[in-house]
Length: 408
Image 1 (cartoon, rainbow, N blue to C red):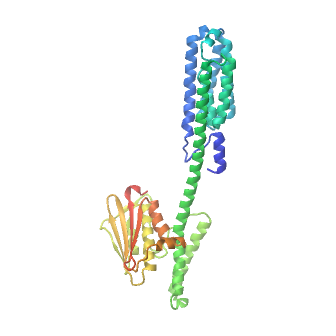
Image 2: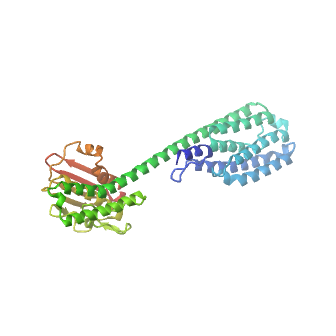
Image 3: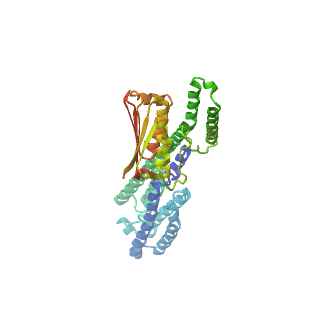
């Protein structure tokens, strides 16, 4: 919801987050209250209309009140339909009924505290103003009904004052709560929008890291090697192919399309084709194994939902790429897959030089997001965890754990 939407909701009663709103149950409760209050008013009048000076006039008013209540029940159940015109008509009927009570009832009954024709039905009008506009319209409508009670039905008696105070307190309290609820919902909506934008930015960062940035890093490494400027035709063909993939990926990003899944370092890695079918994680990890990297997995398929398996394999790919880039040419690595009833755990360990404490934080501040986005970000989206352990001179171990019940 935009700021304009939040302001519109504050005066129009149309605030919702994710299709839900704390207001809608209140509006429905008000519509039910009006029907029940109408039944109470009819019952009270039926039991006492013979004591009225002009009982026919009372029946005429209650007939009109019944028709209006039934006709406006649907409007009072929805903040969009309950316009200020509807509320104004409701208030007019309430005031008219109160004034008519002083004209149709006997003075003796009025002096003894006889109720007005609409009785507690008038409270539904104040509640409607409170739900629509907050405590100020509720106070204004309650004051008008109170003045009608004092001037048109019995004067400033103790019962009248008591009823007016209760009506004002209830209306203003509910109106104030509604205002707080709307402000909270608007704040929550903005927070959800920021969170969604942040998650999308993180997703794009992961895709770019796994594709464009890795290709650029590969080009940089090839260019820094001795004789890099005179690399063989096969090397240039490989770089050309990868550069073409990244050009298409960036064009898709600029046109707001999703970046295609890819592995810059291992373009032949398998991907799940149907996201609705379980996928064997071991099959996705097998292309990462070579003469330097050993894969150890159960003999039976390690099945995960397609999207979860793809994301977990992508995180393993990012960890393997870090081994190739940072552990040294002679370092070896081991990928261990553990299939447990509650979770799937993948550990990637190398025997490289490791890194000093605080190195990951420095890399993230420098804009290198391989660990924070491509590894930890993916596992966080899956409801899992990513732990990194390293001691200088003793290599690095990355432990990725995905709970089965948390995977999509």
